[in-house]
Image 1 (tube, rainbow over the protein chains, first blue to last red):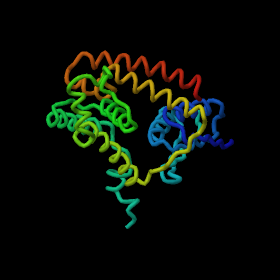
Image 2: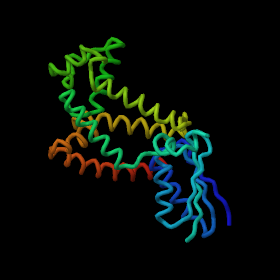
Image 3: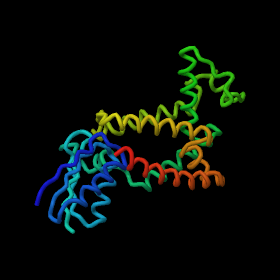
Image 4: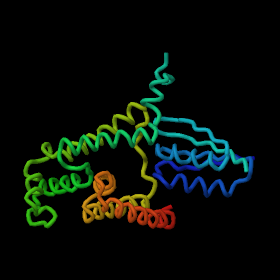
Length: 75
Length: 177
């Protein structure tokens, strides 16, 4: 079980979503992917996609206009 | 009590409003725009005027340009920024967006990630600006206002907007990621 950081700061939609999808594909079940974003629309579409896929998702606001989407791969 | 945890602050100011709420508000305001200015809501047309005014500031002239050749376009340019409803409205969009991010304390100056990102942004901006002008409208003037006034051109615009977005996304993923 590892924890992987994905730096998407400064990236606009849909880049964070595509990067998160690609990265999650390379991980194993039980691994945690932390996507760092500062684009508010990615704060909506990244968690939406991950929840739809059935993963556990948490959003943390780490600074003004900066979030970490924490995704635990469950399948 | 901490404002940050206040229920009303969270719902109204901090969190994004639902899409349906946005759609209803946009509809109401675009009807108000059409009723009060006699022009449907548009965004990129006013930006073309901004370009013309900037060009005039550095000594250029657009009098002979086909795009600005109509009497109406010349009148808008002569009357200036403060008498152009579209320009004031665009300013309102920018100030309103700034206010919303500040109130939600989500304002952040983002760093530029790479040279590639700059190239993509400049290319994308030029293509969108040029495309919006030769199509006589962007996704607001041609699509939103077009469809809401029951014009077939809005639907044609929608179809090609969709096709363009598919091609654009593929190019983005292939060359700029």
